[in-house]
Length: 96
Image 1: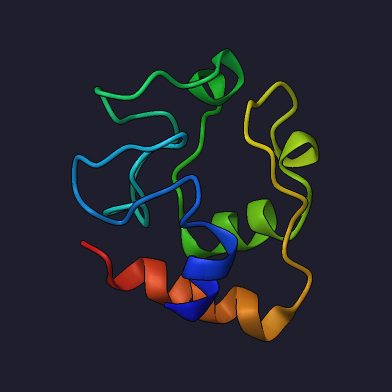
Image 2: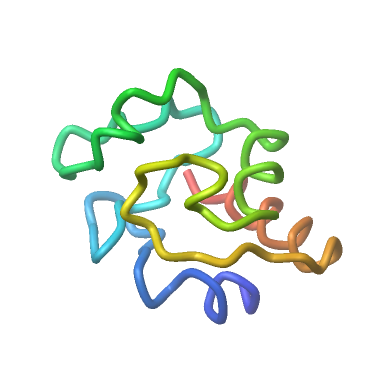
Protein backbone atom coordinates (compact mmCIF):
# COMPACT_ATOMS: atom_id res chain seq x y z
CA UNK A 1 0.00 0.00 0.00
CA UNK A 2 2.92 2.38 0.63
CA UNK A 3 4.01 2.15 -3.01
CA UNK A 4 0.46 2.86 -4.15
CA UNK A 5 0.32 5.93 -1.90
CA UNK A 6 3.63 7.29 -3.16
CA UNK A 7 3.26 6.39 -6.85
CA UNK A 8 -0.44 6.36 -7.69
CA UNK A 9 -2.77 7.92 -5.12
CA UNK A 10 -2.43 11.49 -6.35
CA UNK A 11 -4.31 10.50 -9.51
CA UNK A 12 -6.01 7.19 -8.70
CA UNK A 13 -8.24 5.77 -5.99
CA UNK A 14 -8.77 2.12 -5.09
CA UNK A 15 -12.35 2.78 -3.97
CA UNK A 16 -14.98 1.37 -6.29
CA UNK A 17 -16.59 4.16 -8.31
CA UNK A 18 -14.15 6.82 -7.03
CA UNK A 19 -12.39 8.33 -10.01
CA UNK A 20 -9.87 11.12 -9.64
CA UNK A 21 -7.68 12.49 -12.46
CA UNK A 22 -7.33 8.83 -13.41
CA UNK A 23 -9.88 6.04 -13.15
CA UNK A 24 -10.46 3.99 -10.03
CA UNK A 25 -8.08 1.04 -9.80
CA UNK A 26 -10.61 -1.04 -7.89
CA UNK A 27 -10.71 -4.43 -9.63
CA UNK A 28 -8.01 -3.44 -12.12
CA UNK A 29 -6.47 -6.91 -12.37
CA UNK A 30 -8.57 -8.80 -14.90
CA UNK A 31 -10.34 -5.71 -16.26
CA UNK A 32 -10.19 -4.78 -19.93
CA UNK A 33 -8.29 -1.54 -20.56
CA UNK A 34 -10.47 1.54 -20.92
CA UNK A 35 -13.55 -0.29 -19.67
CA UNK A 36 -14.97 1.72 -16.76
CA UNK A 37 -18.21 3.23 -18.06
CA UNK A 38 -18.05 6.30 -15.81
CA UNK A 39 -14.57 7.47 -16.79
CA UNK A 40 -13.54 9.42 -19.91
CA UNK A 41 -10.44 7.60 -21.19
CA UNK A 42 -8.05 8.86 -23.85
CA UNK A 43 -8.69 7.50 -27.34
CA UNK A 44 -5.36 5.67 -27.06
CA UNK A 45 -6.49 3.69 -24.02
CA UNK A 46 -10.00 3.12 -25.41
CA UNK A 47 -8.35 1.51 -28.46
CA UNK A 48 -5.99 -0.60 -26.35
CA UNK A 49 -6.96 -4.22 -26.83
CA UNK A 50 -5.66 -5.74 -23.64
CA UNK A 51 -6.68 -6.93 -20.21
CA UNK A 52 -4.87 -5.67 -17.13
CA UNK A 53 -3.09 -8.83 -16.06
CA UNK A 54 -0.19 -8.83 -13.62
CA UNK A 55 2.22 -9.14 -16.57
CA UNK A 56 0.56 -6.30 -18.47
CA UNK A 57 0.64 -4.07 -15.39
CA UNK A 58 4.33 -4.90 -14.90
CA UNK A 59 5.11 -3.99 -18.51
CA UNK A 60 3.00 -0.84 -18.46
CA UNK A 61 4.15 0.51 -15.11
CA UNK A 62 7.85 -0.20 -15.63
CA UNK A 63 8.16 2.39 -18.40
CA UNK A 64 6.88 5.88 -19.14
CA UNK A 65 3.14 5.77 -19.83
CA UNK A 66 3.63 7.67 -23.10
CA UNK A 67 5.82 4.79 -24.32
CA UNK A 68 3.57 2.05 -22.95
CA UNK A 69 0.47 3.55 -24.61
CA UNK A 70 1.33 6.33 -27.09
CA UNK A 71 -1.34 9.01 -26.99
CA UNK A 72 -2.32 8.43 -23.38
CA UNK A 73 -3.02 11.37 -21.10
CA UNK A 74 -1.39 9.60 -18.16
CA UNK A 75 1.72 11.35 -16.93
CA UNK A 76 3.88 8.71 -15.32
CA UNK A 77 7.60 8.06 -15.75
CA UNK A 78 7.50 4.41 -14.74
CA UNK A 79 8.69 2.50 -11.71
CA UNK A 80 12.12 0.95 -12.16
CA UNK A 81 12.46 -0.68 -8.73
CA UNK A 82 11.43 -4.33 -9.28
CA UNK A 83 10.59 -4.93 -5.63
CA UNK A 84 8.37 -1.87 -5.43
CA UNK A 85 6.74 -2.79 -8.73
CA UNK A 86 5.97 -6.30 -7.47
CA UNK A 87 4.59 -4.86 -4.22
CA UNK A 88 2.37 -2.44 -6.14
CA UNK A 89 0.99 -5.13 -8.43
CA UNK A 90 0.39 -7.48 -5.53
CA UNK A 91 -1.50 -4.72 -3.73
CA UNK A 92 -3.61 -3.91 -6.79
CA UNK A 93 -4.48 -7.60 -7.16
CA UNK A 94 -6.07 -7.53 -3.69
CA UNK A 95 -8.33 -4.58 -4.40
CA UNK A 96 -11.60 -6.06 -5.59
